[in-house]
Length: 205
Image 1: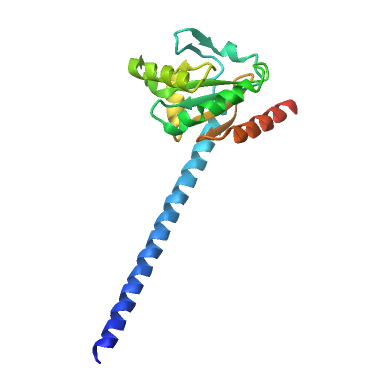
Image 2 (image 1 turned 90 degrees about the vertical axis):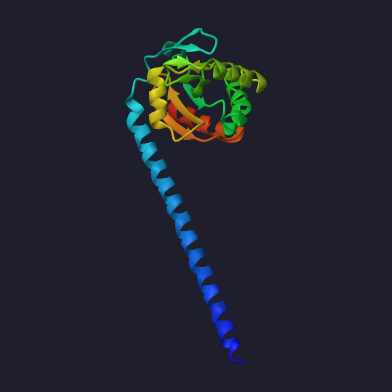
């Protein structure tokens, strides 16, 4: 008879321990989420602070095929999206067909997409041939026809200092000013809404 209170007490202790651990887990997850949100907000503020940079205004780069690509090539488009992706980034590769469809939905004079696989060079200083070939293979496999360029030291440093990760997409006006930055991949529908909204804002200026 005397063992029953002990068993009840033991069950209560186990239940209490479980609740304490559960509460600790919830607090821990909340802390992680809050930290991420703060980090994301700070990153967005940093990107906005960099919006006046000339990174997209005065560049001289090369395409993946070694052809010249300069800031002047973007001047004829009202809106440009620069999609930064990685050859070892599944979410990046997954959204490439949607970006291709989006790019084909507009005339270049209105909107165009430019891509850059950030890992085809080492800090923009030297090209990693295996990555470069892999990037070309991925673009071919996903049916991408829009231009992709190799980042140089300046663009590579800018991307590294402002991105939380890949993919990250920068939206620019015709002068190369950063209008909006989107972190993470999106569906065709979501991208379409973003582009429509930005084009409308540009018309009202």
